[in-house]
Length: 257
Image (tube, rainbow, N blue to C red; front, top):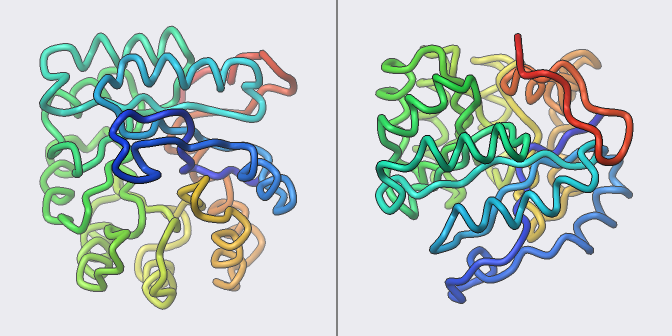
């Protein structure tokens, strides 16, 4: 099963760009189907009210849990003091599988890490090149799985790519995803130095084409077992999912390890 571990969906209210305006799935789903993507992890668009955005995302995920999973998004500062309530509602109430944080909003906090630790869910944290924070949080919260998308930088910062690879080599609870990484040789280096078991396929759709992003994984020339891990097995591991339900509306399997 090919699992796209990073795709946005729903409406935002910032109106400054696609990332906080709208993330429609119709074109993405056609492309994903053609590429053989069987399951997609959905994240809310940027919003001034993430509790509401998470509820809206749940309405997309719930009708077909065999096709979609969701991550809860929270704002580290604006949602301070109610992170646990927002995330617990999403995980226990909506069946969401993780937490999404973006440095564009604010830096990650202990409050968020402690909630993830308590609920045994991963954190997808876009650090926007600020990789040094990953070394701190990975050391402080060794039981939390941190996935740092774009190999540390969507902005094509080669220094962030190298820094994250170094950090991943020291902390086994840090993984990355392939989405938006244009400097392909740094993905090759990540495989060589860290191993394919901590690299997740992700597209950062719907703006990025899932088939184009998938081609990068194919181009790595991994052995079949390693490629299957990158294309889905690693996401199942970090989310502690033992499997996905066979049909629409069914719950995803237990989170227990």
